Image: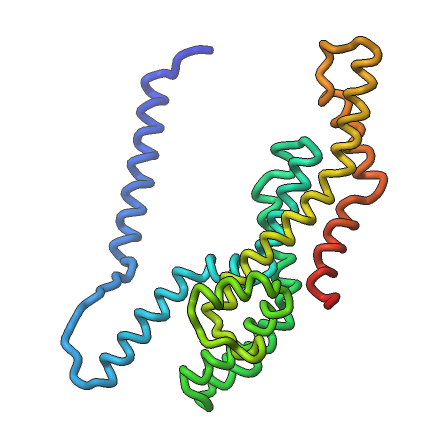
Length: 256
């Protein structure tokens, strides 16, 4: 390849300079609007209350990912999908981003009735200024609390009721939501691990059979994973594993 000629290099530099000059002129003619943040003194108690509400809202938005993960079906789904990937032996397939996206959209599908109720009973009346903020929060928490109550184990709920030292509730509706949430989380963890164990069993059987056959044939130097992985993938595809696992996961939140 011939080196670039000096004349051609000068032409390229002149073109680049003209582009930069044009961009600077265009920027001077239509400047980007600036954003100024100022801190001043409040003239009334209402302004202080509004400022505190904005700070609380920003804090809630910061915690939104944790709320989405811990108070919905996301925890069970992502753990089961991770167990399935490990049971298959494909450590990087499907990629983590794909599993997270699938778990997120399945969570939106499962939680849609709950969020529709929150929107109808809490968000829309609050935006129309028909209810106060505290009333809207109470109404928004009721459907979410009802969803979590359906999947809490009595033993887990009793544990956190005892730790929190709250009065013994007559019904589960009397349990405060700050006790419901941790009980729901550990209940979901136990359920997800139980499903993961059941997923492991058939693939573990395949691994044991392949290892036993290779040992019997004296092929001890051949890694069993080279034989068992294609067999497990073929078995998973033949039984339509994705349909079975996703269908069972989704139905586990509706059949109660």
